Length: 330
Ligand code: ATP
Ligand code: MG
Image (cartoon, rainbow, N blue to C red; front, side):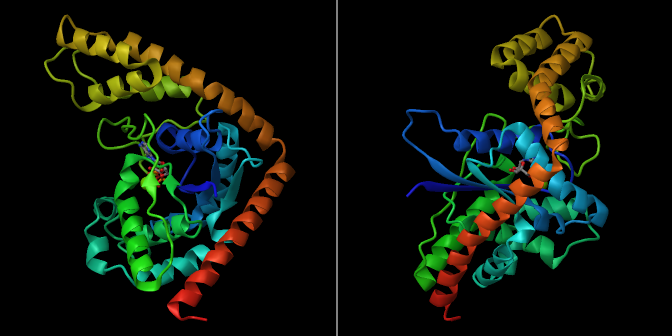
């Protein structure tokens, strides 16, 4: 049997460079494994629209984004002939399994996760049960397809640890055969925020560059990365983020060269920022062109989504049937 893969992105906005490098690139790699590697995967890629409601959101924005994220996926190269592309909320079984799984998870454990603490800091007025349950729902997303590999950014590692623990507990207690899912890593597993603090996030204004940004937008966003006089003994904050972007889009050699200059005679940020903006745009341009094709063909997008939802449901239903039987619920 082929190994199964699951990944998803919240419908909290349009995709940014972090989502692309940390998640989508891995999703593509597993969808299109290099010929000759002998490995093939069955790939399930969703828009995590139910995860969106774990933090404050606008109904109108969610309605729009649960489709836009899929168009971003298609533009980036996810292929409905090779991957099951679907909407989480259309496969009710994810929610059903999440409730069953929650029976082996303690509240204390969930409250101690760094991801939970981050979101509490970001939204102190919205510490809800849904937020606390986020990792359990994510475990259900993966385990319902018996997913073994999960292409996600490094920020999601604590959630994968939860998924593995749940799988072990369930297998022990109920005799299920859930695999212990592993994260599939990419080079851009942690893309920093443009603010110089924390990671790039859809829900943090000023932190991101969207895949749909044009060259002028990219230039002005990169220009706002906070920098210093251009010289110093250790690279930190915005300068560190800037150099990380250089490495991601222009290579490690270029970064090492700039760091050495920074520690020596000094660097000129305007030139670095301009070159970097151009390198980023070069990578995004073909994605933007492909996006326009899908935007102009809404019936095709509708069909891709409804076929994906149907395929995902078929597999999810089998797992639910098995779990209910083993738990004494049928
Ligand atoms: P939100 O702010 O709403 O949580 P987000 O930008 O963190 O949005 P998610 O939808 O939570 O995006 O995550 C989608 C995927 O993108 C996950 O695999 C996550 O690990 C990855 N990801 C998110 N931000 C980054 C980042 N800055 N660098 C690398 N990967 C990232
Ligand atoms: Mg996030």
